[in-house]
Length: 264
Image 1 (cartoon, one colour):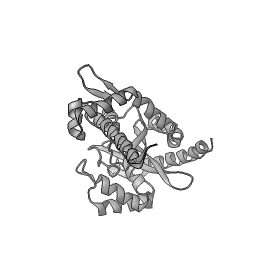
Image 2 (image 1 turned 180 degrees about the vertical axis):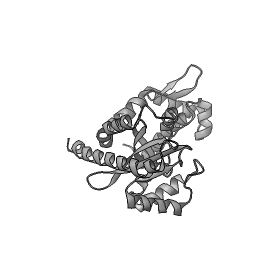
Image 3 (image 1 turned 90 degrees about the horizontal axis):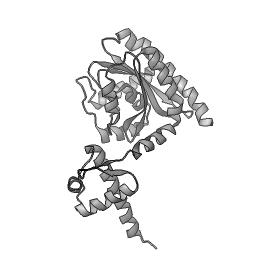
Image 4 (image 1 turned 60 degrees about the vertical axis):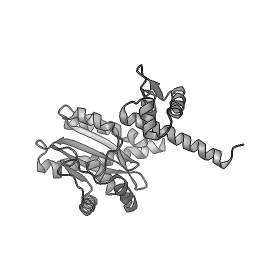
């Protein structure tokens, strides 16, 4: 029978294995020596962790002795995403809006204070697709410089917003990024007043976006949808009037779909 100290050591061991997995993701693979120096463990202990992870199918050993994450994480991620009620309710609407507008449309949610893209679609006129695909893999996509992220922040509990800002910070992505907390709070109030969020080249220079929050049947914000396009193509009228109306309608349709998904 295990005692409390045994249980503590086992939990610590799991935490170390997870730390190693996160480092493999961060560095796109690493050697035992590199990992040992970062996690402050002996190479032998790191090897034991990696051997266990290999047996579980989570890590692979490359020919030159480097270890990498296995493709098993693809199936895990697909499983988690496909089970999301928001994904089920919003995927088709994202595809249709992208096809209709010809631009880029995102469906996002928040996880551990960061933005997670559940689905994205690129219309025939979409630009920056390679950047968006690369950006999808980033572990910490800040909420404060995207239209969809700000749309969520505006309706989260204020204490939760404080936690996110304290943990993630307000890093600068472009010269237009909001890095002042008071200015962010003013924008979040404006978003609540009008029901949509604007991103005026705050995340990527030359790109404008409009986002709207998505609420569950209890009235809690669970995600957001946004449409992005080059600033040169999205005039002020489109940016501040036409696209917001379309985005709000799309968010409302997802909310209707969500009720049906949750009943299933």
